[in-house]
Image (cartoon, rainbow, N blue to C red; front, top):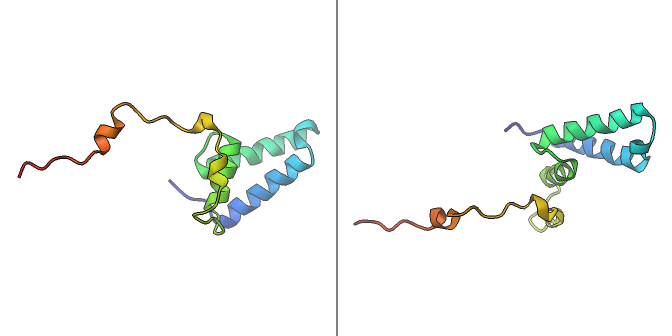
Length: 98
C-alpha cells in the first residue's frame, strides 16, 4: 500500500479539524462538500473506510507517534475484529517430524 507523506497527513488532519470546528457539516453545501472531500481523502490516504479510523491511522503514522501513544486505544469496539475460528491453530508452532 502506498503511504501518504506525513506532511500531507498533517495537513489533512488540520483541514478536517478546522472544518468540523467551524461546523461545516451544518453549514453551506460548499462547506459540507469540502468536509466530505477531506474526509474521503483521509480515508484513501490511510487505507480506511471510516473517517474516525482514518484520523486515528493518520495520527499514528505521523512522526510524533510513539509506542505508548494511546490513540489506538480509542478505537471503537465495532472495528476490532474477533479472532477467526482456527486462527489459534494456525499460529501454533508445528511439530517437527525429525
